[in-house]
Length: 325
Ligand code: PMP
Image (tube, rainbow, N blue to C red):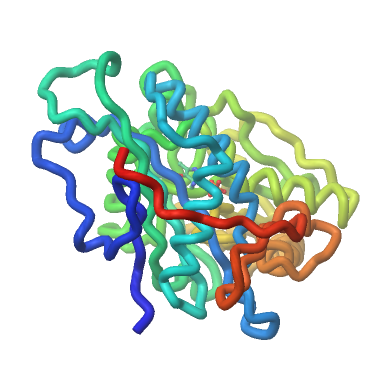
C-alpha cells in the first residue's frame, strides 16, 4: 500500500513515527521555515515532475539564513532526499512535499542564536485545491505582517498565524479566502497565495516590498505571460479600489496553482466568471508544472518511480540512507 514518507533525523520512515519533543524550540516560538513542492504525477508518461525543486530549496535556505539557521544539508542534498522520499511513497498520483527546517534544541527562551537546527521533509498526498469555478474572497480585517516584523520573503512558520487568522475569518464569514492588505492599505496576498489583477488590460501584481512572499508560481506566471503571450507584468502597489475595478483577478501558489477570484467583498470581479487571461495562464501553468512543455523542461526534475532517481539532465542520482546526524 502506498503511504506517506518522512525523511527525519537521517532516515526515511512513516511520518507517524517521526516525532519531536514537547520542549522543541520551534514548537514554542514558530522558529522554523517550511516549503511546499509539487511532485505532479503524469499518468501517461508514468513519471513525477518536481517543479523548480532546487529553487524551492534555495528559497528555504535563504529563509534559514534569516533565522540564523545552519543546516547540515545543501540544496542538492535536499533535492535528492526529496526525490527519494517521493519514490519511497509508492504513490502514483500527485504528491506534495513539505520540508521543514526548525530550531530543534529542546530549550526555553526567545532567541535565534546558539540553538541547534534540523531539517525534515514529508512526501504525502493532499486533497486537490478546491476552486469550484473561482474563489469568493473578502479583504481581511487582519493586516498583513510587514517585513520589519517578520521577514515576509521567507516562509517563516510563526508568521503563518497571520494568514491563518485571515483564512479562518474569511471562511467563517462564508468566503473562500481573505486578501490581506499592508499597513498602508496596499493589496498584499492571501494566506498562502500571491495576488494578480488585470486592470485596463494590464497584468498587475504587488511588488516585493508590499509584504509578499516571492512565490515560485508568481514568477512562473510572469515568465509565461511574457514569453508566451508577450505580456509584461507590472509590479506595483495595488489599492483596495482596484480590486473592485479589476477585469480579472487570480491567486497563484504551489498548492493552488492559478486560481480565479470571481468575487471580492460581494462585488463580482469583471463579469463574475473566470477571465480569459486567467484561464489561459492557468492552462499553460498546468502543462508546464506537469513537465509537458519541453521549452520549460529546465524547471522540471523528473522521477520515474520504478527506476533510479533521474534528474532533468538525465543523470542518475544514487540516494543513500544518511547516517544519524
Ligand atoms: N504567499 C505565501 C504567504 C505563501 O505561503 C505561498 C505558498 N508558498 C505563496 C505566496 C505562493 O508561493 P509559491 O508559488 O512559491 O508556492
